[in-house]
Image 1 (cartoon, rainbow, N blue to C red):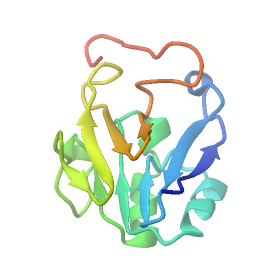
Image 2: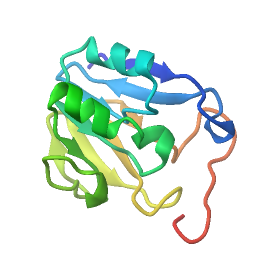
Image 3: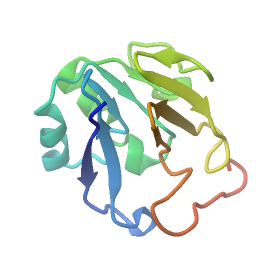
Image 4: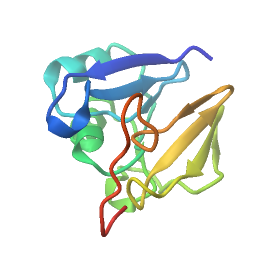
Length: 138
C-alpha cells in the first residue's frame, strides 16, 4: 500500500520537525494536523473519505472540524470527543487494510494503525528523541 506523508509546518516547540499527516490510497487520512490553510489544501487535493485520529493533542486534531466540514468525511478516534458523524475506534478493529491498536502511554487515547509492514504511531514512537508521557493523561 502506498502511503503519502504530508508534513505540517511546526506549530510549536513540542512538534519537532512538524506533524505527520498520512494519506492512504483508499481515502483515509490519519491525523489531520494543525489548522494551517496550506496544509488543509494539500490534504483536500486527495479524495478524503475517512479521517482517523491517533490521539487528542492539538498538533494532530486542530484541523478536525475544518477538514470534516470541507470534505464531509467522518472522523473517528478512540476518544468519542473527537468523533464527527462516526463511532469511536476500538482496539483490534479492522478498517480496510488497517488494524487499530490501542497504545496508551503518550496519551490515554493513543492508538497506532498497522497496515502491511508499516505502523503509523502518532507520537507513540518518534523519528528522533523520546516521546513525552505526562501525568495525568500519559
